[in-house]
Image (tube, rainbow, N blue to C red; front, side, top):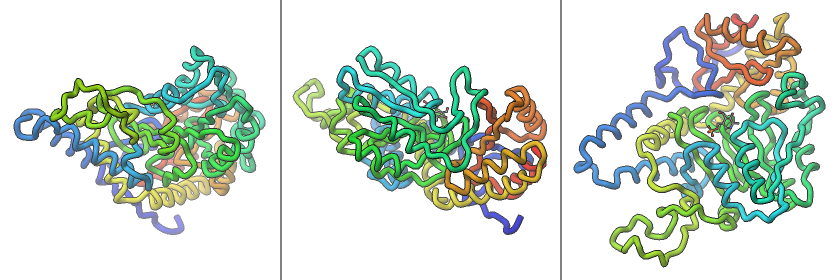
Length: 403
Ligand SMILES: Cc1ncc(COP(=O)(O)O)c(C=O)c1O
């Protein structure tokens, strides 16, 4: 290595054994000790509700909104606390003022959390259309027969050119789950604004490892169990206030003014819907999970996602430089390095099977497991996900395994 890379997230924030490489946060992020401790403390209070008061669950809702706001340079009141990415996207899809014949548009091969909420709208006469992003891009049954993304591609242009007169929403993954391609949200937002289309983003594969920029987006949703390093069961849905004003409320008792103020009869239904993110929220939230998520986001905010992103990029550059010399993966390393140089990658390095098939990738992944290296395979790719705690030693172990 040219210079030693100091991880912005210290390894001892987690419980990693020294010989283990967790390159799998694209499936499940490790939870920092501080978050587990915060959840334990919260759970202990459940033993003695007379000490904490009946509204103990409300405190973590506020702390999580505030940490989410710091992470995304946004306002706390624009967040809706949801149960998962799917839950947030479903809320947007269900509350949107559709007209029969409208269309939602998406890239080909989205993770199903960003497909089924829109496909479910067929019953309301709303259709769903997928757009290939590069030559040879395939998904579904043909996924393995497709070509991987390569430098010079213009996925934003493909999407914007596909917008038709019936398109109301363009919904995309910020970072794609299988091939790891990162879309330029700024460019998409500008194109959508010109065409009067709302841009909705599934941000789960970028949140925590890339700075979130919400400018020009209608909605951004992420579960917290991957790069945001929290237990599964919570999602953050951010909505632009102007966009949110056009959504129908989801109808929870906490989505109305003074909803939880028992000094006023709660059976008084003459009250207005809230205008902030709570407009789309469910009833009472699970304080235990929210407490852990708030502590995980606090750890990420202390490290800073700008620093984490710089660190991950430097690790990727070093990993790809060293892998480029390997016979088996050299070509893939060069393809990914060219994408990296164009700011086209998020935290996932997805090595394409190149005709070798899933069995070859699964065998490589299994061989990694034998060395206590945890990675994953999806739709023709072997995924290696790096985060703010990885260091030079991890890179050496990964290169050694593959080369
Ligand atoms: C792009 C993407 N979106 C969403 C999810 C998860 O969705 P949910 O939070 O609804 O479980 C995943 C992976 O599990 C994903 O890769």
